[in-house]
Length: 191
Image 1 (spheres, rainbow, N blue to C red):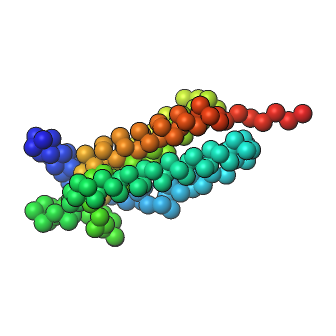
Image 2 (cartoon, rainbow, N blue to C red):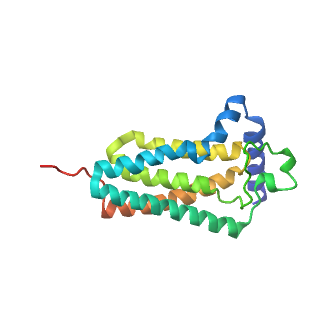
Image 3 (cartoon, rainbow, N blue to C red):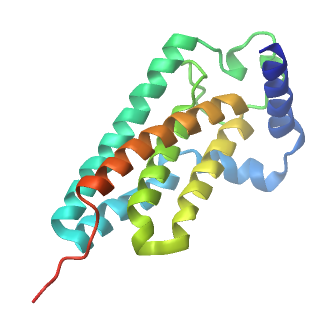
């Protein structure tokens, strides 16, 4: 376990302190903010019910349930594990580049951003892949960029992101699998 935590700390300092540049310093703090990613989710919340009618309404309900499950599960693990965020740890805080105005006081493991976005990515991938094909993989790219941003700006360790991603993908797999077995999106026949 000590080797894993040492690796985690080293990777954190590479991402947060060495693999940096002006473009990422400008762009990545935005990537983790709701005003940046909310338009995609708002689009999905309008697009799917509009195109799939009643099935789209149930998709919307499962989308929100997936978010709630990932968010609450991540909060549970944060309280259970009690890991300090990099900027709140008195030993390493002086060496952390913090690129956000507000620094959370909550626990670090697991990342709620990672859990939420990877959960929604998995749910969307499972349920929308039949309609959008190979483009469905972009949901995971989106979630990965947001997760990477969390480490880059100094609010999470890489293992927090991995833990949150695994937690979110499990929740998305369960909710998406249930949705596909019971409801499944199909275009309504109009005659």
